[in-house]
Length: 323
Image (tube, one colour):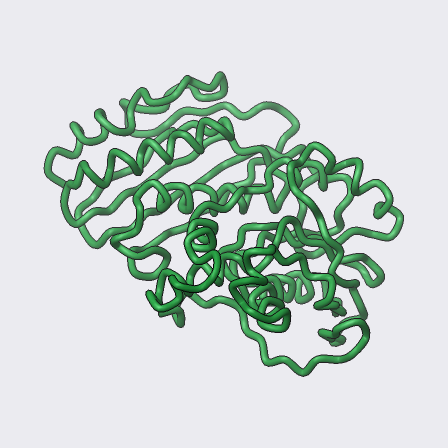
């Protein structure tokens, strides 16, 4: 990319305070970092591609927030505290009017969560963003997908369904006249990673995952890894007032909630003996939690409404099928 090093110096270098565990962040072939003792390092890499994960004309500040928050959410799902991020940016040409608000938003969110940019790359090509985030979790305490047991309760953080409604608004301008369209579009991009909730769950939850492909699709990852089944009560799904008004019926809103991708809320399971401690443990986390069902024996899977079975054909979000 023309002027690569000038671009890096102008937009990415010396934008943040230096973390004590970062010994070298820029100016050499590699970054040098030193993690604290008695922790494991959680690492996650995601790529966002223009036209697949965001529209090329989307607000660059929102794109930056979405790119980083989706990665932070992976750390939150394992109970990790974010620490470092590497970022590779591919652009068809240098566009400083796009890059300036993008970087302002990126570093604002990074600073909020105490994450330092420690390296990356810039190249010329179709617009895409690849981030690798790393964080710390106490040794042996990481939340995983394979710990759910029969009888555990299934919970989610926040509300579900808003992101899918916001995506509809983005993809079809006719939806812009529907109630709360602008707010739901904003929520599609501006998720809140549940880092504090994830950390609090390390001693309480038996399994966890972040909701990137829809709660039904992502819960099934837990069920597969844990070799269990589940029962979900749609009457318990947490729905925002804005979604209910947009969807026009509770059934439609529930469908949104079950299949909405890129929510970046947490879905987790809690043993009966830890259920009573959940509210106090998450009091400082800044989000509500809702019990939506219970873990059942393997090969059992049911969606019901107050014990009335529902034969709904549901599928989660698929990046390769999304239009």
